[in-house]
Image 1 (cartoon, one colour):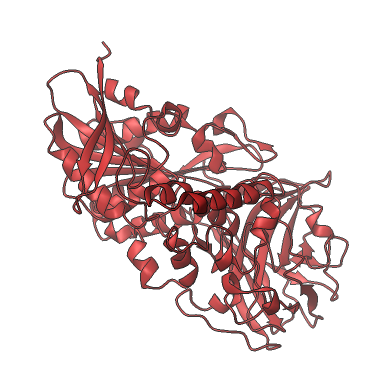
Image 2 (image 1 turned 180 degrees about the vertical axis):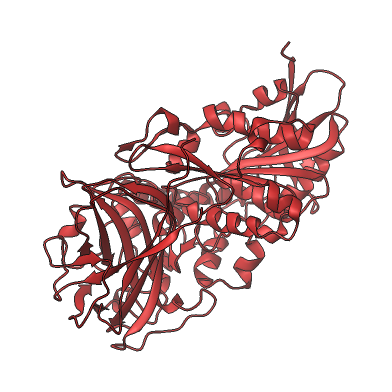
Length: 586
């Protein structure tokens, strides 16, 4: 028999500094005590579309025997205070969990869950290690907010952060009592940016972007761009795996912009010093983009439909969530806990789920070396990928002009001015002279990879700082060029994300571009392709090719860089793929 559910609205929960956060409570309508699930959200806790379409409907969870606490984050909607993006989530999450544990309807066992920003609130709270927290579940989010959220490879994730941060301005200035005339002007600027997003993203310097330049309203935007290296500012926000004191379940997507944070968290959990946490965490990676958590693109990423087995969203995640918390908060044996720790979707051929004890599974590194006669520019050039190391060869070169960057076409990105993310055809991009294209012969049989992909490049640049991008592409017999994985490296961070180190112009230098992880089968008759360039805009900010940090560079700092990529016996630039023998089909 389904329990009747009692809903209490806008219960004001005090934080340690006296600020009260508005909280809705869903629980069975009786006098019993129940385990508690906490969900903290900045998008209005009382809107059914927000709270019911992402991981689990709180009414369903209450009917299942939980008390569910859904809370507006600090500075959002009915809660008091002013939001500091990411900055208060650790303490507020801790205080909310400990408050929930001692309520008369609580049995003292608390779990927390969330997706996207709500996943940030989840992992930040877990990193604080509240005593009554028993388990955590996060979905399409990040633990390390520096690498894979605000920056990736040292380059600013521009298209996401510029718009998302500006969106915090309206509630902030209303709460701060900003002068009405100033509010009207800032609203006008926001409307103009929305109407001409391409121009908004091209603002130089980014530190002076409309609305974002208002330090009193959005101080954290300036903190983000002031701290481009992984310094103490970011280390204090890093929800590292070693801070986790309870079992963690997390779900990622191959085409999600925030995949990198899950990959790092997973590796850390697999090496966690506490055996209970190390051996009990669970990791799922599906073929999704970020929109899947909201109920869009449930089995599709860009142009590619992966079929019914790839279904995502609340229809699938809700059951997994309840199994996870039923085990840890109710002590039940659930099917989820009897399966291997890693469950991942192998794209490209049969489109099927695989299960292994770890991610990534065991693999054999295969090097594909760059070859050309010095004219690898465009898909019509002479660039080639081969397993044989190069001999004496002429370097390839191109000019990177920040005023004419390579456009973002698909990949791990939200929708941009050039269209949606996910699987998109790269053919048009490959006609540009500032894109080097290296293609393998047609495969004589299928090739399956599962794990981390890297590109080791020997480069030289005329600039003291610049970017290099890499993109792995599946070239189909019909000519469609499907993006599989991509990455970027800001050259000043080639040796460390903690310390900048400029290039010596013209000097050959080795660097490694991380294309992140993927599981993919290249079919027989297809070809591998690697694209090398220096921009992927507007996903990433443009490097001005100067010592000025790119987010502070103005038009006067921009110069065209001459880039060289070496591939000879002394400098064998190469792509490394993790080749696997396929585990059994799920």
